[in-house]
Image 1 (cartoon, rainbow, N blue to C red):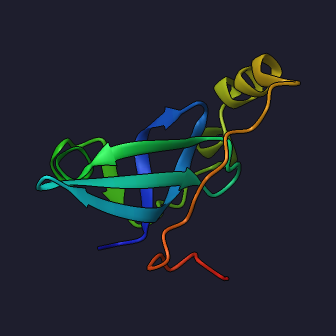
Image 2 (cartoon, rainbow, N blue to C red):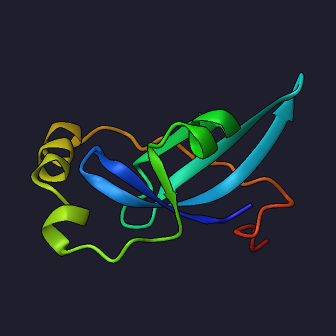
Length: 99
């Protein structure tokens, strides 16, 4: 599976993500995607959503800064100021597990 993805639409103002975890439960494959700019921006998505929805592009698309980091990101950070960060747990078999 490709590890680097670009969201067609910004997610909390960001578009470049890495796939850090893959889990399989009851035949459903779920991926944890984390923004390369800000780990606070992470989402879980299914295989179907990632591959078939048209919302994601394999690899990173070279975008102008204003398209890859939008005003929505500034607004998101302003709203989250002072809130605790959700921890991200990396699976042992993840390419991003460095322990």
